Amino acid sequence: MEDMIAAFRKVFLRNYATFAGRASRSEFWWYVLAVFLLNIVVNLIDAFAVSPLLGMPGETGILSALLGLALILPGLAVSSRRLHDTGRSAWWLLLWLIPLIGMLVLIYFYIQPSEEGPNRFGAPDPWGGAGSGTA
Image (cartoon, rainbow, N blue to C red; front, side, top):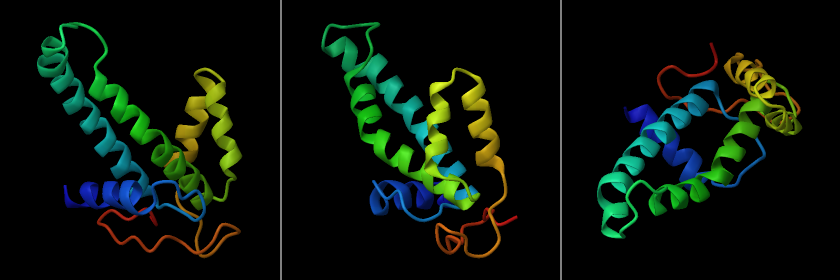
């Protein structure tokens, strides 16, 4: 749990729109898990508290939309840094534009181990959380 919170803080607070550098596999996946859980909580709050108060039951919630807007840049940034950690350019993110196949290829890239030592994008991320992505 502490690793997930630390990864979310690092990505969201310290590297909000930092596209340069590298992100370890563990940092990336802990952030993805934190965003997933945060989305569930915010959607529940929207569905059972905010939307009924505004007289819009069943509609897409305002909090969910604001959370989505707030997480676009850090999500793109950590994804590009994760690709850098595997030795790939952030231009590979354009694969999201290819339905299904692009997403599967990017997930495959994200689960790949980090490149050992420095690469053209910098030194490995020293983030030392448990389950570090250097394995």
